[in-house]
Length: 338
Image (cartoon, rainbow, N blue to C red; front, side, top):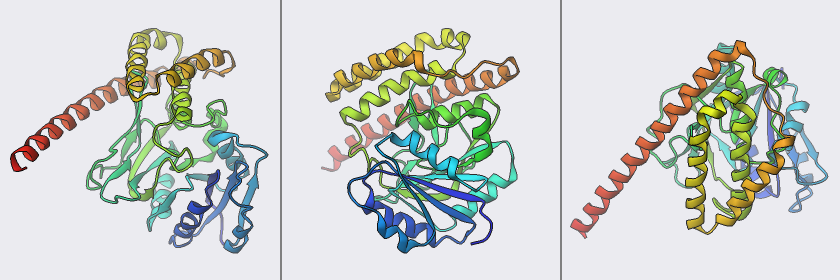
């Protein structure tokens, strides 16, 4: 191993069956200047002694399950590289992933994070995530979710990188802070990217860095009581933490509407009470949230963020309308042909 430019941090919780293919996809990369750090949240599925067969892997087992945020923070602080790749254990890197990430990060010191093109593991014709967007309604969503891999082929600035497979500039964490451990899991990557935007750093989507992602491997399903409650709570934390008072006043009515719509949607899915519990937990925890301090020199960044929130809201609405129209047309065609 030569110099270490990239530290690969993999948080793990009962993910032995996913780790092996993930590691194998790293070892076949053409880029070699990396180290691997695995932070384990007190898993019970294995003693992980088999990792010794994979060479120089730094392995740290925590004394309990502290969630994603604490695990990756432990890894980032152990990292020797100037860049940190956060990687879910249920991923497999495509060839050239590391070299593409490294090449783009080296070109611009204002880049905080680079989000990869995440492709569905079991349907490799469809996108899982092409970077994350955040709206004025307080909703975060995965760009390109369920769309053809032939779309989202342009490198561009985005609101947030998905920490399931994203490269971060380590030095920036010292400026804006690390992942907020109060979040435990979900929305913590949107929060840290939000802070990066406030400080004038860039989050970039890179379509040439591709990775296959199973998704919800640790939580067990796309929607469940645990996940809904945490997401509802953290949806309150994100704007409260990052929006100064004037922005909260401007966006407050839209946020309330957004939370109401989410509640009605989750109620229909059978998770209404879980959503309410998450909201209640959020308000109880606001006193412990460390808010991002407002600085007048960042005013132009707040204006840019506000523009992004509005743009992302319209993009989301238009995308949903188009999807609905196409679905209706497809249904009509099925009826005609059926």
